[in-house]
Length: 107
Image 1 (tube, one colour):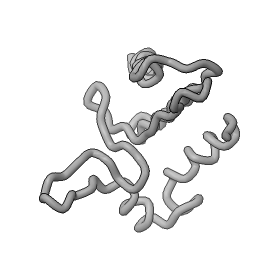
Image 2 (cartoon, rainbow, N blue to C red):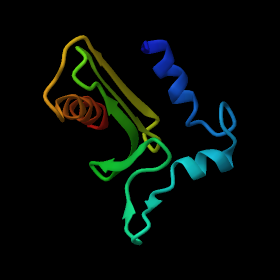
Image 3 (tube, rainbow, N blue to C red):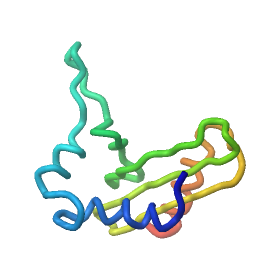
Image 4 (tube, rainbow, N blue to C red):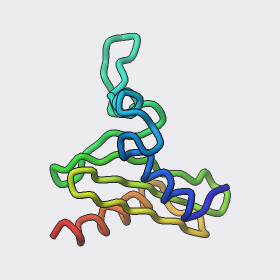
């Protein structure tokens, strides 16, 4: 259970020293190396990808419980996109909507 205020506090966690020490934040945002040697674009509980050649840190959620959410932080643009939806959405839809909003602000 969460709300928009919680997501605002989550954004603050990505500002070094506000919630997490710089070293802790760096560890959280480092891609994970699997036991087989592969490296994946996922840190400690957070996705590490890019959109339009811009670093994106985020996570989507839902799970068929009647809601969906997206959190996407673009540190190089100082932009955070948060979407909270009171309906199940097709897989990927909420992330695509967050990307559309980010693209609007990028351009």
